[in-house]
Image (cartoon, rainbow, N blue to C red; front, side, top):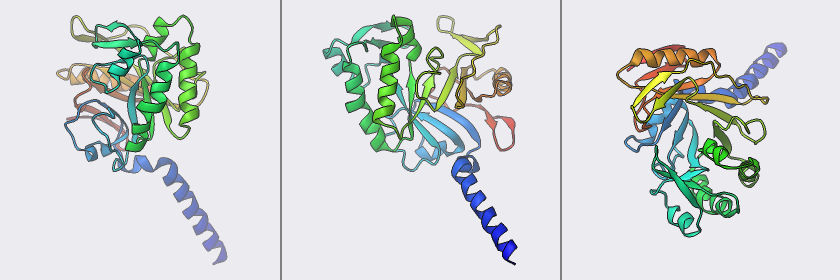
Length: 269
């Protein structure tokens, strides 16, 4: 009887530990959603294990059971952002990204870092997000002569907000240096031609394995009228060990082809 009790207690402890680490998978069917629209109630996203949302559109995610990341662009800013005028007035804008209509941000003098730390991130924390999704780092890497300012910016964010998880979008050159918890492989299996409005599979096999053990996600964009092609991308991503998403380039729609983690099958909707 004593041995039985000890074994039961040990089992109960293991179950609780497992729930703490893997609990999100118990209610989520799909690994990843990146969604920048505002057409759905927050509960809709509970089907996904990890969700990236626009914090200006979803300002309260406390009821969201999924792991939540707030979109934050480190290297560019759109005119819709509340802090756009502040950046413009401080002469922090440097050129335009014609594909997305956003403006490049000059990060060298530290002004953007202060705005980010003191004005952009605090409302996100208050909204209940678990972490930050750091976008347009590749844009910064392409423009900056040295990655030092970019690395310092990300390190500073982690120091000021140590509880926030950080997911880096691409930025493979610095992925092993900065304190991130997850890495997103955006458009590494397929590419999108903005002029022609079509996607195509890459003929080369992109590979990057971080030195540190972190979660690896992927997102690729494909026409919703070709679901079989989307399913093929999922298969490629799984072979690479990613937690994948294949969706529309606008990121304003829910995906029509999804990977069901529980059943380990690709579903068509």
